[in-house]
Length: 241
Image (cartoon, rainbow, N blue to C red; front, side):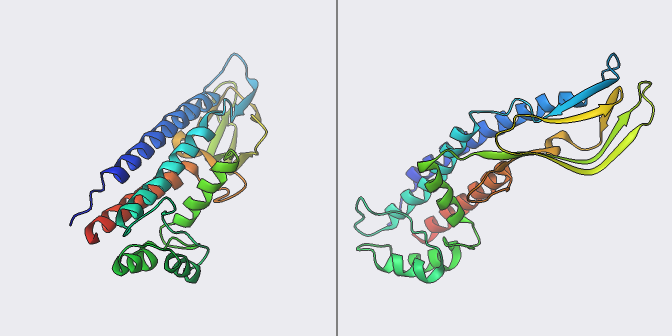
């Protein structure tokens, strides 16, 4: 009998919604910071400021996205389990032996072929190929404390600081400017009328996970990877259900 995965897919759709909100907020953050590169010939000696207007609502939306990705797996596991109860949830463990022991210790679990697939292919333990154990740890963190996006990073491959006449000035190459958590602005003082950025601003600015699981990993790249991995796991589990 086919298993209807409508519930898990709705949860995944909700995660997509939150990730989309984060991408919109992040895009606005990039646009505001990009203004710091515009020419100001009326003020040839000025301070360029990057890392401004950090989106304060990002942590709560981030937590919602993480939780819905995690709950998607819980719902799928519940549907696959014979006689599930209120304690039934997707298994996560620090290593493979602990994962196997955790599943075997459950009073009710999925068919053995599904269990084998979860253990061998989905691998929801530390170092597993889909990073679901990291997702699990992030979800636990969000239940007890706000996940703090930090630091903010500006990676510059090449930035030309022009003189007051628009001519060649100083050249900055391969620079990373980091704003640690608790500081709102990274200030870069330049002497010149304009700054010409050679990178794509969308790839220059980034917001990373702060202390805790996945520290210093890009938030948006990580979320999109986890989203794709959850989708792939759902597809695979549905086929063997």
